[in-house]
Length: 399
Image (cartoon, rainbow, N blue to C red; front, side):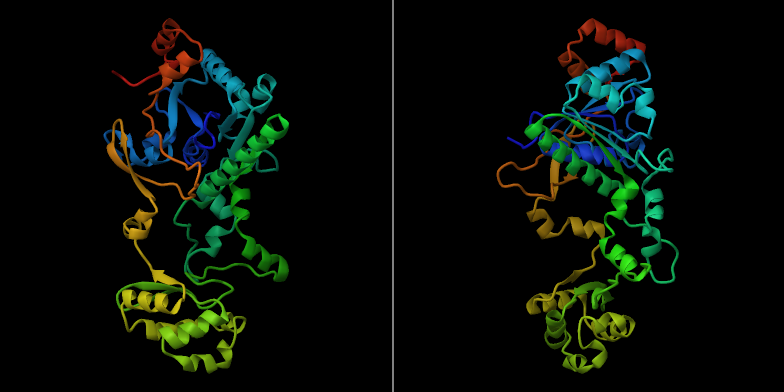
């Protein structure tokens, strides 16, 4: 049995942060009921590319969920949603502060009828503070956490991280907090409210940068692939591509010079004498290493690094990364069947639990695919469900 089997999650979220959070809960066995607008559904359903009329990216993040297409602005829709929340173990939403309150579905409303519910809100800036009512997407949070100013090449324009780092960190932080809240409920009883912010989540990642700022007032600046406090620890150009090298302590530095680069003379240089000295001369060091590394292809350097026990590897494209034997052996690419897309590849679970592993029980749902099933289980009869569908309060797939 999966660890969250039997846990009911009512999910009002859309886009990425909330859906990724509830995907994690679903992967661990939770029954996630995804409540969506009855006409256009989750906004991510409009994200290309489309296969079989369905958004492939949206399908990636909404697996292990059931879809209830419900108009929350209608009286019956709100009543249905509140009824589901009254039986939920967990409620997740990522609207701007105040939206759920206006719908009568905020924490206070749910807590009044279900004091055991763990309720999580994910927003750009959180529920408190002067910016709490501002809208916020990942790019906004990357700008307001300093990420855009510390990413990219030296002297270059602000650069975005290649993935939605604030969205995803907030999602993972929310999932962790929800599970912590649920464990507390099992031990002591009682639900609680969880307030997660994209900006807070991003700042929580900056532990090295915060240490430099608080300790010495040093602003993190763009360094390309280079590490700010270790050297050599970056990507270098080879004869046919790039290789990463992480020789960031004296033991690894010696192995790199003697066994990989065959440049023991570098060990005698006073500017490279120890792990504190090398970062102070990082530009010069990188230039000298680059001259050697350009002389052979990436595969040769990776083999030499592995033989010497020095961390290193090739710099791959994303497509190459997904095709690596190691990635496939770790089941990080899986195959499932989707009702519209058909056979599709999805990402696997990064944490491997020996006794209660995460897994994919169902593909992402079509909009409203489970509306009738969920409403019927909630005690509503077929005539009432048909009436709601006719009125546009609820929708289900045609046919």
